[in-house]
Image (cartoon, rainbow, N blue to C red; front, side):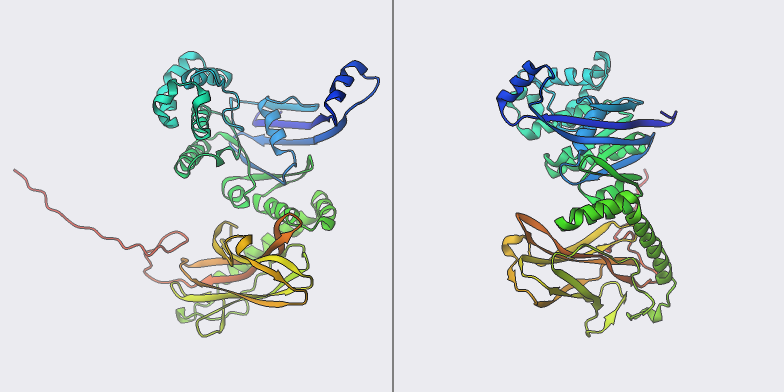
Length: 455
């Protein structure tokens, strides 16, 4: 373990014993190794990585990839079968919040017990108790048995304890989806403050945009294996391509990721994105009138594997129906693309998403809110022209548009086809613009001057 490493994982493996019948567990006790009554399930196999102090690292993976098992072993709540784990610094984990609470004890008693497990002395907990109590916001219930708490109250108290131990390593496993929106924002604000203090954060999420925005590095797990690690945008792209792949293409995509072939394609794609962005920013402003520049073309288009559906001809049209890619702030436009169906599709919805150059999703829309409101069935050999009207409320800069078609395959919804960076456009610069940031919220400043009377 290097002197600057906060977490070092070396050849980590975890095997669970799966018994088909309850009696098999008893039979295994008496067999004394002479016969095996269980099946082995390897949740993790030979996973290795190092996280330096101050890094924020995201872990991505499909359900069942071993993410939660990995975090539990790093936190020490689960023992590994093989391999080594070394941590340097106080660890606070936000996994299954409240799972270590004793339901018969009061909230106050559980605070002291949980804080002791996290490494605080009673004197340290005394000094922080008021802050913990204030953050939890459960009032007089702090002295009631935890078994009387709602799930939301349990989450509040558990998070308040974990976050107030001044962790040097914070481990988050999307445990904050239970609380209300105000509490979630309060939690993330505290996490951001911990990150700013120089703590190391290990962050598990299914949200690609959250990993891109929060993390400096990302790791992709699948079926207990580490497939890749590197730049968050690249790893998120690999994860999404794997997540929405047809079943017969998953193995090929896994091998492409493991061999580094898909990473090389993603890095080339990112390099092309940068070149195109520079070219777009240097394009002529043409008198600040919207227009089409044939040189502003996305060279970083990434296509998901098709489920019998293909998207083509993505373009932006102005109010007169002319194709444009240099837009004026405040004007209305139409984003269109064609969808061809080579097979029949069920519960079809269409979508679009606008993203920044960094890959952060700004906003988009779907043609229906859910599968129940979607197009019930689209026949094979059909073609559909999709159109989304939008007002350009973006500030000057370069942006990308995604296109997507969703349908039901098997028991759930998935992308029938998707184009990432399908369309590149530029919002023209303006002089004396007062709007800041990415989105123009049409803010108007107002101020008054009052005089001060002197005696």
